[in-house]
Image 1 (cartoon, protein in one colour):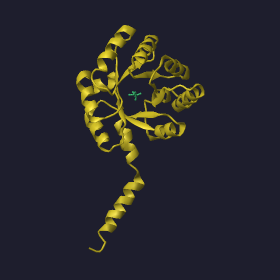
Image 2 (cartoon, helix red, strand yellow):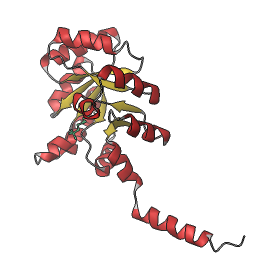
Image 3 (cartoon, helix red, strand yellow):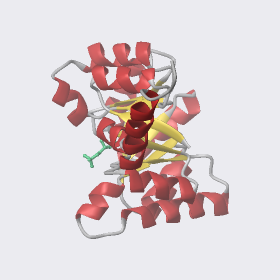
Image 4 (cartoon, helix red, strand yellow):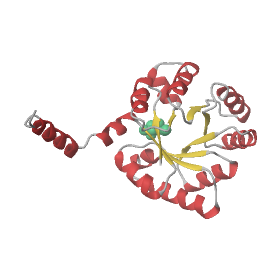
Length: 214
Ligand code: G3P
């Protein structure tokens, strides 16, 4: 399973990249606003850190605007994936990008039929937001299982990119369900690394190392 970091914070991205655990990066307007930088400044820097798919989101909501924005974004770097909201005009833009060989990540997916339409439009990635479904008492990971099954049933090539990940168990389930990728906040990466038995075992090794004969 590919792991993308869900962040526009280059410090976090550098840290995760140094561990060799990330295959790409996803951003969105909220994440970019959070770091207080311009999209046209932060995306090229991320592309210089991570050699993999880098999702940059359009802010237009009409097809012409999305297409114009996306065509500009892909000029930044060969790894740019244009992130498009799952709305009617978004699918029109996806279809145009698909014909032009521009990769797309269709975002804000909350139902299996939305995911089916995105795949039919030619999306490269689909981003179902599992955490936001959990937040309103739905079982977010059920959506992943449905989409993986539907895509397999009909041979769609769109890659399931689990998004809105809230903790390590989302990743365990995503991997068991056969999702192609997941995009993960940096804090979840650190949560995965932090295991009490690892810490306890290391502490004991270090204590015993002091007893080793020199
Ligand atoms: O990639 C989408 C992700 O950033 C949304 O996460 O926690 O705002 O639902 P969240």
